Length: 103
Length: 382
Image (cartoon, rainbow over all chains, first blue to last red; front, side):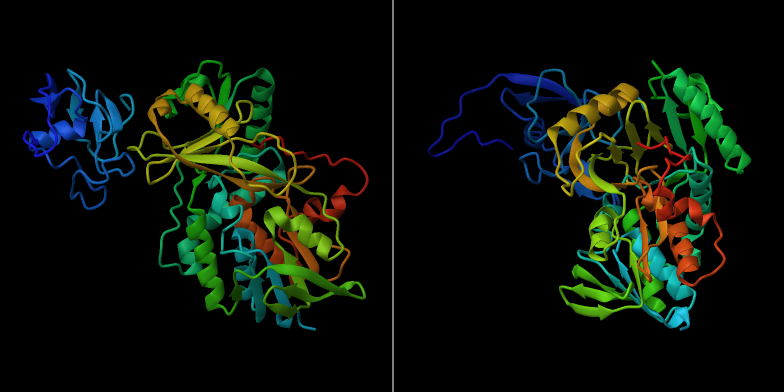
């Protein structure tokens, strides 16, 4: 979902950015955060809780909580709510607590 | 007077005080009160690196650590604890970076093996097999003991607390000892922020504040306290089983069962009672950790804190009586009081009850610092 029409604010058209999410190609817009782009594509489950494995979505949206941690370009625990989207990013739902560097 | 009926006051609610309380009550002491100025484990116990190793450089430290490990292995059963103290024996890898250290490692391992501690001297290649992400550049040799490990200091203190409480020990938390009363050369009681406690026996287990408590009784203990910093990272999936430490690189680093990494250094600091955090520590710690364990570069630091090392002149603990009758001390652990706590409790019980000591207590006595330099200096301290 994106707000295109607003009674007061005007939104300029922004360029499209391609990235992959769990192997699927999706498109965000310039200026999006990763989590913002995912949300706009209808992806609301960003991670799973560590113990009961329940779905976790967009929560604090300011980089304080761990709800949106995902593995991006191989780096674990990226706070996708505050990380700007870049073309070609490989975004993955994280399994468990995430891994470092091939270990 | 039957020593089991003595009014006993323990000052300090860290792991040492809690273990002493349990051991005394278990032996039949009927009047034991523990006084703690904050909450249990609020001092060095709850701030420590939580490691337990048997790879020491003096015979006595090796023996005490070995017996403590045997206790931790069965802690829940011995204490009747419902929970899990999270004792994980994944070993300690000690990394050396120069010839002098290699030679010391060889001596230490020989000593440890003679005491049936299953330590081994390893080549850098063998060390890398244990920890694939270890950067062996500059590493000359290592030692490894598979039965070393780590456990949860809060839960272990809690286990002692429950077992001691069930045996009648009274715990007074948020109560600060303000003075120790001495009459005719023997203890009479303690004054606290919550009233007076008459006592026949007072045990100073005040950790970083042991020297101050000693001074209240007129006993000068040759220890000093220094702030030692430590940090914890975000959790990741398990990559490292053994605790990794190095004396020459100045680091200890473990991955907890929760997945976070806990690491610290032993930078020499002015003595005092501050437990502040510094950016200098954060920078030096990060550099050291990432050099030795490169994948940790991607981890974020969640928080850092400080705690007090209570350093004795020879880096071995001081356990025993003093010139004031009825005033006993267990301090000067020099950064390893947590791991030795089971033995601390047992030895203090033997001393207070006048039992035959199970270890050579003269090597732990306060009197050993009278006169000449002591022989057995423990070098293996971070």
